[in-house]
Amino acid sequence: MTGGLPSASGLQLAAACPGSFALAHIGHLTAAANSGTDKHKVFESDPARATKVMADVGLAPPHGATVRQEAAFSYHVDFSEVRFLGYGRSAYAGAEIGPREIPGTLDYLAQAPGEAVVGDFKFGRPEFVHPAKSAYQLGFAALVSARPRVRAGFVFAADESEAWADRAPEWDDFDLNDWRQRMRRLAEKVHEAHAAVARGEQPELNTGAHCTYCPAKNGCPAHVGLIKEALGLDMQDLNARISELLPDQAGAALDKVDAYLRPLQQLRGTILGYARGTPIPRANGKVLAQIKNEQERVVNADAAWKIIADRYGEEAANEACTLKSSWSAITEATRAVRKRGDIKSMREEMEAAGAIRTVELKPTLKEVRPDDPRIVLASDERPGLPEADDEAA
Ligand code: SF4
Image 1 (cartoon, rainbow, N blue to C red):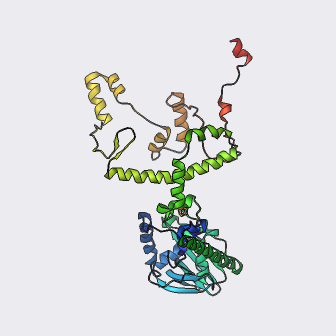
Image 2: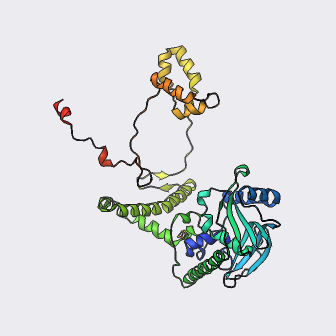
Image 3: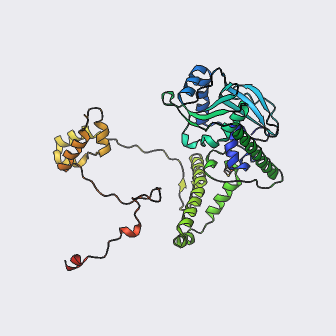
C-alpha cells in the first residue's frame, strides 16, 4: 500500500475487496513473486527480446514508436494527471505519492503519436490472472500511456517459444474515459475503507477466491469471523437439514462451505507447522508431534523375484512380487517405439488375450454443464423392479 491507494498491481484486489487495502498487511515477497521479478529482469535487460515476444503475440509496437520498459508512473484519480517516476520496478518506492495517486510500473510501453501499446508480462498460472478486457492493471497502463488509442494485454511468457497473450479489445477515448471514472470510484471505496478503519469500524470486506493472495488475510476479520462461525456450527443439525434445501440453496450452501474450508485449511497448515516445533496435546490424550521416521526396507522386485524363485520356486516368487500396469502406462512406455495405428491393434490383441478389459466405474461427482448427457441421478442407479421374466425365474 502506498499513499492510501493501492499500486496498479493491487487494483484488482481492491476492486474485489476495498477493505483489503485498509487492513494491516504482512508484507513479504513469496518465492513465486521473486521468481517473477527475476524473469522480468531478463526482459528488462533485453528490449529486442521483449519487442519480439510482444510482436509474436499480436501486440507489435506501432510504427516509429518509442519503447520503454519497466517505466514507473503515477496517475492522479481526480485530475487524470500522469507523472513519470523513473525506471525499474521499485522506482516509485522512493517517490512521494499523493493520497489520490496510483503508482505503478509498466513492463512494456510503446508510444507513437495517437497510439500506444502496453504489455504486462506474466510468468505464473493464467487462471490466477484477471481477464485483460476488464483488468484494472491494464486500465492503469492505458491511462498513463496518455494516448487516445491503446492496445493492451497480459503476455504469458513463461516459455518464450510458446508465449501468448490475453489481449483487451482496442480501447479508444470513450473507453479510456470509462477507465478514468472506474479509477475514481475505486479510489472512493478504498478511502471509505480507510476511514472506517480509522473510526475503529470494519471496512467493506468481500471474501472469495481473491482472498488467497490477499496480503491482509492473516488478520482479516471476515476470515477470523468465518472460522469462528464454522467452528461453532452444529454439524449434526446442519447435516439433517441439507435434504430440506432446494438445489439452488444447496449450491449456495456448498459455495459457503468452500469459503469456510479455504481459511480452515490455511489455519490447519499453520497449526501443523506449529506442532513441528512444539508438541500439542489432542483430545484423545496423545500429542501431535514431529517424530523421527522409522527405517523401511525398499525391495527391488526384479532382483528379489530371482532369489525367491531359485529358493522356493516361481509360484512363490510370482505371489511375492506383483507386476502392475495400466493402459496409460503401456501407451506412455511404448510411445517412442510404436508405429502409427499400433495403439488400436495392440488394444484389440490385448482384449482378445484377456490382458485388458473394460469395467464400468462408479458414477462420480464432477462440475459439468447442466445439459451434460453423462449426468445420472442417484435414484437411476437403484435396481429397477423385476421384469415378469425375472420373477418367473
Ligand atoms: S482476506 Fe479476503 S475478505 Fe479479507 S481483506 Fe483480504 S480479500 Fe478482503
